[in-house]
Length: 373
Image (cartoon, rainbow, N blue to C red; front, side):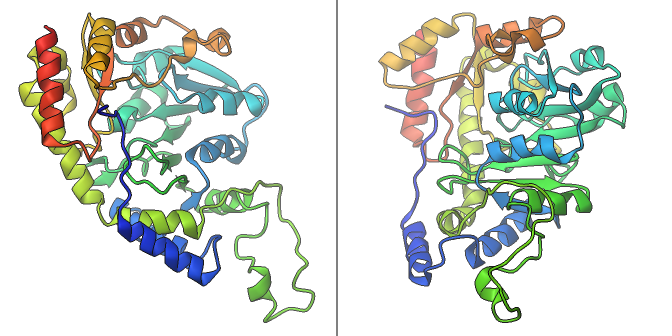
């Protein structure tokens, strides 16, 4: 089976893990520090970047960090990871689910504008498959007072005007799970513009302990009763460990190669798939944008038949994510029309584009799709 996503961790990660096991320090430590330093250099983010257990933790935590009040409204596209709407509800907030642009899968700006109310405090955007939402244009529709939260889980490697996606909003988060571009087994990270809020976030994700609090062993050098501690605020425990970093550090060194490889495959599809399947791509590709190409999405009126046909030919396809406005749990939070989403979800299909896809497999996918017609 040709998979939609496919991790392929190299032997260097095993060697790096061995070093962690030998050190006997499996938690957050020097490997994590090195990982963060190298990743922020790649992303061209100077500060306020922190790794934790998962991107989902970051999303849920984001609702704790911006002083939202009960029944405040958070606008989000129907094409969102469900933890975004769940996280808002857990905090006592009201999700406001709106339509998407069918050509990108990203939030529809006009639907955003229509959904604004006096209770609107934030918009939670998703950069679908690494296609960047135009933050500057979004602000033209919503103004400058609405908080912009970004789910950049699939956008690692997407740059606009040489700036990493996720560096311009008030909050952004990334994922390093087994299906992402940078695989660490599990893990996530967040960036917060405001330094005071960033420090608060770091404390929240580690039990509420002061950010500069030393570990018990380090504290023992300077303090009596070093095992005692006090909490600055409430918090949870969500940490990125040396184990995760050891897996990810060698992968980080290969990031540029992975991005180049995915770009090569995307170009193969652009140049060889039937033109009517990919016409929307012409509107997406901009000279000032470098793309992560996390998804490659084709559109066809015969989507379901094509997906079944490809599965029979051992090519696995899918469509992320299931629309929130059609889920029983979230239907009551949907507002306005969903013409864009209805078009997108009836005609779109994600086809394999992972960095380990062989040329022969890409050509087989192209031939299979074209032969279907």
